[in-house]
Amino acid sequence: MLREHANEQYDERVRAADLWVDTDYVFTTEFGTVLHPRTDNKNWKQLLVSAELPERRLHDARHTAATVLLLLGVTERAVMGVMGWSNTAMAARYQHLTSAVRQDVASRIGGLLWQTSDGPPTTV
Image 1 (spheres, rainbow, N blue to C red):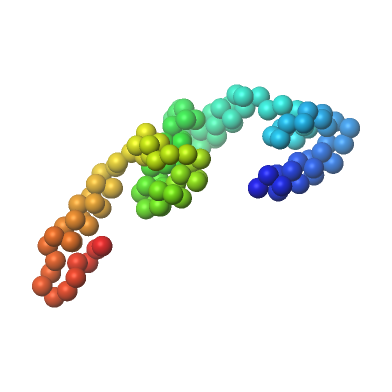
Image 2 (image 1 turned 90 degrees about the vertical axis):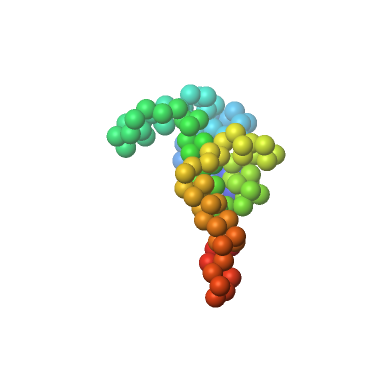
């Protein structure tokens, strides 16, 4: 991924030509300058306005992403990779148990405990 990024950055350097500022940073603007730490937050706020959504913190999107992965049934290992977590304790902080998750768990348990007489449970 870093090699791919370096190739993309090289292309940006070529496009920027004399405007390129060589800072030796791995992640830069399209002109090679240092990224401003508030840029992501500013872009997030503009995105919310464009989408006509209520104001939310950028960090809240991280909780939403983690919870959506839980709802999709993505394995813990995959979630850790996507979210950049080094330990499973982060799941408890970011993934929120929704009523849909609770209902799914209850249905699965019900399927295991109260099997129909004509075969195995319908959910596993």
